[in-house]
Length: 168
Image (cartoon, rainbow, N blue to C red):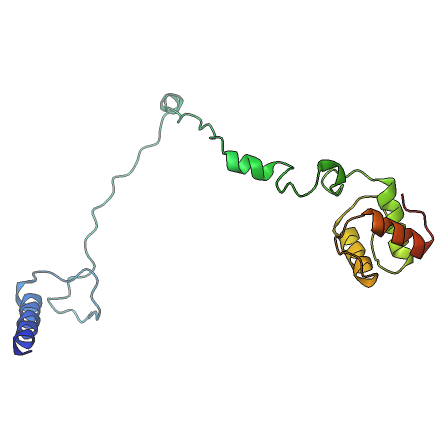
């Protein structure tokens, strides 16, 4: 314990002696700065001046080499993510048509039935979108069906029976 305290006192003393005696100039970023004009106040550190640049002539700009164009590397993971088949949860024929954007008769009929039963406001455009999926899920929950948000055979049959609109 005594040896450790003696070593720390010696180190602290060496730091104080170094700071007060052996430093020739001002510290570049002091904690407390004084601007009272004393000899220790040497001002900000000198910065070497940068020589002015001269403008390039017309012939010099033509000869400036251009860096080669970068060729994008193929990323197989990104290709999989960007592809249409990312989950494999449903075959392409039964997926919602939102990605394709094509209106379908069965979807339009289901949308009309859902609006008639009060599961709207959804747009009757024949495109299976987010609002249509949410309306189908609410309908399935109310009828105590398996909540899928898709137009399965049982959902189509119950929609037709409840609304009187033929969904097919």
